[in-house]
Length: 190
View (cartoon, rainbow, N blue to C red):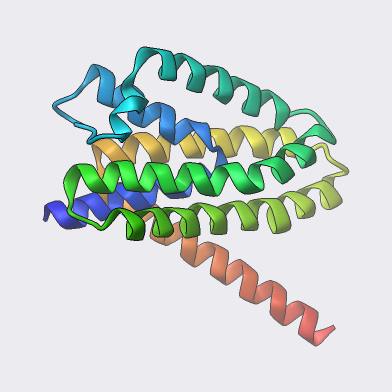
């Protein structure tokens, strides 16, 4: 059962990193620092619980949240985050997978990279451009706020209640695939 919970936790955290790179890392660090019995981080991931790293992550969360709310800057931010979010997802996946399971670190990093990169790609290449085009950019701020809330809730649930986070991830994946296939069918019929 620990293996399954560890995998759900890792997938939830890395998916959250695809929406906001620093929220899951901050959540892991805060829980690892203040509740070490809940989440005991193995080396080198225990650095996430260092108070100075927590302050840095808090500043980075604020910067990313603000940048994602400013028109035009949000697209530049998404371009920059194309590298950062998958790396953050890899770190979050590996940190949480190594805590609970004996997943090979290279496999954990690769899985986190793929999950966060996939979520980021859907966000930056499909969802955000569609929101911008259909709302003239007005819908980007509410969507960004919703993404930040989803990343925060999913990150916390991934650590505290990983089965719920795993189910949410699977539902999100099914919805994205359903939306993507519907979009493909529309373009083929046109």
